[in-house]
Every structure is written in C-alpha cells, then in structure tokens.
Length: 525
Image 1 (tube, helix red, strand yellow):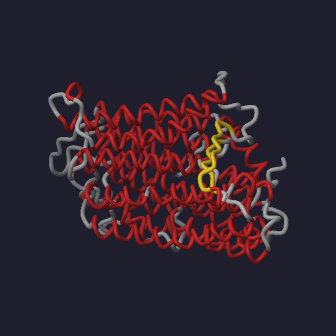
Image 2 (cartoon, one colour):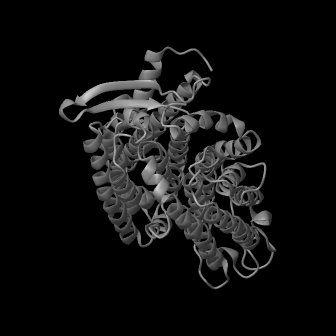
Image 3 (cartoon, helix red, strand yellow):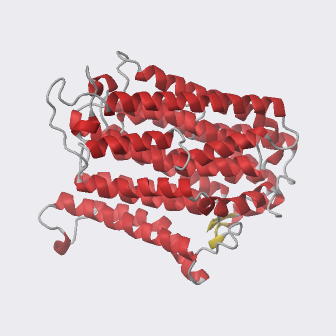
C-alpha cells in the first residue's frame, strides 16, 4: 500500500469509469494530423491500447492506494446528488469485493486491445470496433463501482448494445441469430430486474446501496423482499447465466470474435453474480434466505448439466465446437459461484468471489487459445482439429499445446492453481450452510457439485488428449505457427495470475473476507 490522498483516489476511480467513454467518442473522430501515421486503422487501434492502458494504470494505482487494513469500508467514494426528487445520486466507491473485479476487468480489456492491435477480427471499420470496446469497458467498470441501484441498472444495461454489435458485425457463422438471442434474453431479464429495483427503492425511500445494506432489509416487508429477490434474481440469473436460463450463452460464444468471447466470459458473466452479492444478500436477506435452497438446486443442476454437455461435445463424430464447449463449461463453473452464494455463509460467498476471479482469468485464457487455434486451422471444431490421429499440438506447436494443457488443468481445479480454491470453498460452504437452511439439501448439492468436478476433469482431459496428443508425422502436413509475440504478451499475465492466485489465495481472500463478513452482518460488522 502507498499513501494516496482521498481526493486522488476519488479522481482515479472516476477516471477509470469515465475515460473509456470519452475514449469511445474520440475513436470515432478524425485523428489529429500528427497522430494519423501511415495507417489510420492502426492509429485507432493504438488509441484503444492507450486508453485501456491508462485505465489499467488507474486501476493499479487504486489497488496500491487502497487501505488493505479496512477492506470492508468503501473507499475512493464520490457522492453527488443527481435527481434529488427520487434521491438518485452519482455514488461511486470500491471495497474488498469490487476492487478485484475492477482490476481484472481493466486488465482483460487492455489485453484484448493489445491482441486486437495485431489480430483485428474481420468486420467493418476498426473505429467502430474500438469505440464499442471502450463503451463496453466503461459499462462494466461502472457496474462494479456504482453504489446507487438505478445507476447500477444503467451501467448493467450499457454493455448490451456494444456486445450485440461486436457479435453481429465481427462474429463468425450464425452471428446475427446469436446476437439477437443474446440481446433478447438479457433485455427481457433486465426489464424484470428494473421492476425489482424500483420496488426496493420506492418502498424504502432510497436507492442508495450503502444505506440499504446498512438497513439490512428492516425497512422492507417480507413480501416485498420475496418479490424483489424473484424479480432482480431473474435478471441477474440470465446474465450469470444460471441453468436453465443459459441457452443464449453457447450461441453467443460460438459466434463472437475471440476478444468478444474473452470479455463475455471474463467480465460480463461476473456482473450477474456480483449483483447477487452486492444487492440481494445485504438488502433483501429474508428473501434470499427463502430462495437460497432453490438457488442452490439450480446451481447444482447447472454444474452437472454443463459438464455433461461438454462431455457430449468431446465425443468423436459430434462436431463439437471448442468455443461452444468452453461456453458450456462456464455454465458449470458459474454454478459453483451460485452455490457458494446460496449457502449464505462467509465461506461460501468468499468462495464464490474467488471462483469469479479464477473463472475470468482461466476462461479468458482458454478463449484466447481457442481463438488462436481457429486462426491457424480455420476451424474450432474438435473433430476437425483432432483429425484421425490427433492435432498433435505438442509436436507441431509445443508452446501452444503446453498453454492449452495448462489452461485445461487450471479449469478443472488442479490444486495450486486459481481454479481450485473457489470451487473448494463453495463446496465447504454447502457442507455447513447458514442457520435455518436445510443441511441435508445442501449436503446433496455438495455431493452433486463434487461429482461435477470429476466430470469437468473428464471432458477437459479428453480435449487435451484429442488436441494436444497424436503423431505429428501422421495425417496431412500442417504448417502450424507456435505462439506469436503478441499472443505471448496477451496471455502471459493471465498465466502468471492463475499461478499466483493458486499459490497465494490469502491475497484475494484477505480483501474479500472482511467485506463479506460486514455484508452478511448487515453492514454492522
């Protein structure tokens, strides 16, 4: 920690949220004569790298200036009246729950901008691509930083249109259908969520999330809390995505460009689970207690369903798309996050938050790697990649094969890597759920989740065997480039953080645990 004044911290957070939006506007304007360079397209891509890099620097400065002795306290706060009649305020702040998500978001956007500078997906103007990417960044960062319910909703919705166009204009086959499915599912979920947010704000007299969390639902009747959890939870569950509201995700991932898939999995899915933790747990505790067993049941089914879908895609002759497989794996992994939240315990919620970060790092890396395979082979179809004898990445592109194997074992939860801790803590939370919840039910969910980890290991090891192993001399000759310099630059931070989070989980848990303890105690701990 370094000593940074509160006013500078306040500026850094506002800078991180607002600058991508300003950068998006600037990307559409003609470049100044001195900055055009020989290639205007490269100039605007360089602009994207610069803006996302500046935001990452601001996020790192926020982390360095953050008071790690008081992670449960909101820091770098801005609180300005916006619509006095409705008591809506421009209220920003970060604590131990939101800071890791803010950092990961800034990092992933910067890595995607660097990757796109060298490997821009086929599509319309690079200006539009960079502008949409920056609007998306502003919306996701704002979601993790705002402390007003209606501002949260606006930020939550702000990401939909940019992601729709990234899929529809820069995506692959079936991109129009996938983009429409994405927007319709998420918009319908958001409409219901807005009703729930208005129900809370109008019944309590404020939309301030800090005040509502401190009140801990005392100003809301039991019926109001039930209705609010049902409405808001439905909207958040679509974005998470929770089984059976997940069906938009595989299509969106399969059609999206590489960076779109990385951001969709690494950042946007986290917005849904973050809403459960930030809004529903502290503001509607009675409603969450009522629905927790059902949430746990859906989570447990999602864990097994996602794994079985992946196993089906790995079978020879099924034409299983690797991007689609990783999308279904996300349904399973986010099931662990929801199971941790459903336990209503500090252990489970900390596990959910840890699994959020681990999933963002590991699945982001997996989508980068599969995108690289698709660029080299012209397909991400598993049967096409494996061929008759296996794709033999270990022999043809050893570094690429090693990275794919590393990401796979990290995703299956190998101890010592980031994927292990979140899932283990979620299962521990299910072993001893909050008082008043049915322990036999949660023990069942724990057993189902543990079985899901075995299925996860099975399909990921099959993928590694089929894609990485085989005789490189057998079958048709394939000239395969190994990891390129720009790929190395984009992927190395994700590999390093996956190892660091796995070896030193206390770094992340030390941030989240005090904030979770306070949140579950109604802001009084």
